[in-house]
Length: 144
Image 1 (cartoon, rainbow, N blue to C red):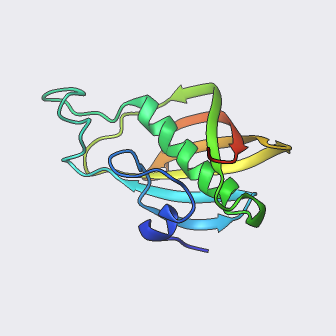
Image 2: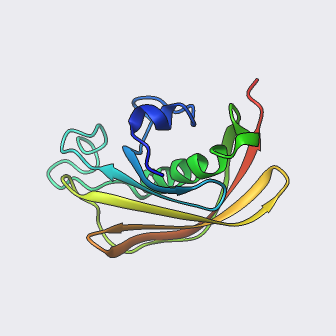
């Protein structure tokens, strides 16, 4: 299953400028997801991080992975219309710089689900090279 930007917005509540994934290339609801973020040279963070040497902040790459994981969790029929709150990151490692023009490939596999709480293994790559790895956790809840 693949999803374009409009279909992603039907699943997760994030919107510009904080919707940080561009497309989903593979999705098995509640199990795994692969998504992409195309790092355009005019992304808002490049202007200040760092002037003259733009680099994507690690915390934003973690958020990109979390949003991909949210698509995976919230694409289950029982979670339709809910929100996945980011609950934690463990063992995060940043292994390379992500620059303007790069395509960040995001992969999340749900490893455990206990009621509303879930855990996933997250990996981001550029041209097949791992640039971010970590273990994320989330909580699924009804919106207020």
